[in-house]
Image (tube, chains in turn orange, brown):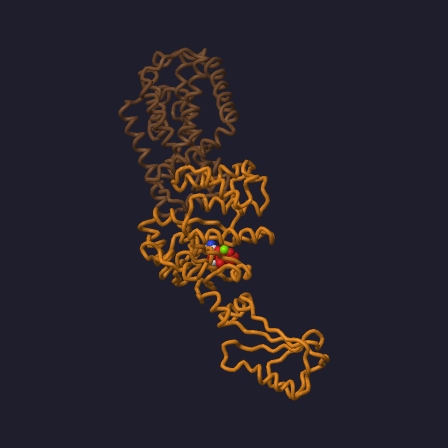
Length: 320
Length: 253
Ligand SMILES: Nc1ncnc2c1ncn2[C@@H]1O[C@H](COP(=O)(O)OP(=O)(O)OP(=O)(O)O)[C@@H](O)[C@H]1O
Ligand SMILES: [Mg+2]
């Protein structure tokens, strides 16, 4: 799917989600959200990153109608969540962070319940499709209490998809889920996106955002400190590392090269040069010349880009 | 109006009840039978007729009311408390169902269960005593109004409670005494004048009085007064529920 298609406007051109000046102070007096402004385009996958307690769940809960805002405005496909709450809510699906399930309910019943609650006519075929897509079909008649944590998580996803929402919130969907299942979930998310579903997910696994998101938002201390296309973000903030495999190991960096940002690795077999991809001069040519005049020979070289995780940790640290 | 949502909540609550139908029915039936044996047969034989009604028959409406009151309160309070306790209430809060629709689902189911049990008690009673119901339609009307009013009260308790203790505390400490002192087993004429006055402040008294009238055509207090009082309690309960949803009290942070 091309980015252009992913960002196509909706029927009435309103974004999938528009949050303006949203703030929240809990009764305890704790200010969980300062002033949040955020716009999510239709059909995109948006990853919301932030450390524990940053306000991710609070933000999602307000949008979904579970927590009351202290002020500000939220619109879903142009429908205000307060004035036009019924329309707004019927467009949203939510997979909560906590594994909250009805122990004695059967999988199929609990998913059908969710669909009914949203006022949709029963559709066993749709429910079967969702359960199959989540590899839950074999468990359809099992009671919730007999399921493993990962399976319960999938049931919560099935429940959220039962009424065919247009905007899906996944609050840490892959917490406590094994690698294989995580891949399955990513596949499902992509399939949903292809059907035009807009997806907002929070995660602590940066690789997840890196793998799936079109855009990334970083929230810290109740404030969105950055929203950026993932590619741009990685490019802009990304630093590349050039690793040179040396023919003869070095004990220390030669004096002639100390003016450069160099490190030795792998017991002196590797020389690492870090540079900024956006800088006017990367300094690579100069480095290679200097190496050659210092008589240092190398057998191999490669570059690697910093991960989103490094970018994220860096951002949050810089902010605090 | 999301009627399908209401129906879904209602059906969910009823299904939960039907899963344990045997327990749900056997225990109240056994309890009521014991009341009949002790109060109706053993003690009743030594008590003269009240307002021309044999004592065994006289206590039937009171016993049914006792059951309807406790069951509506219990069912409704548990019905909403449990999703709050387990966290599954998130789904109801996020769904396109209004406060009124949520109440219709939960309270409707709790009241239905209480009415079914009330009718079962009535059927059980006919095994012990002979009697006719003077105003069957009013009997059902009063039963339904009582079930709804106390289910609303149960719903309020279920939202207010922050632990299982409180959940059983109120029914035990408030509903039962009100029911006993509301004339389940006696006519207020049998009380000293001071206590008669106190009884007038007991809402359950009006419920039982009107209910008894629907059976025997006689009552401690005018049916119109009773009906007005029942309407008043219903209005108060509705107002409290409306307030709960408007402020998000214990439901939405
Ligand atoms: N009901 C509440 N009352 C008071 N404070 C709350 C409440 N819920 C959350 N908070 C506080 O608000 C802040 C944000 O919480 P939130 O759950 O939104 O964080 P989060 O970003 O989802 O964190 P995590 O990654 O751990 O899930 C936290 O400091 C939390 O303690
Ligand atoms: Mg969270």
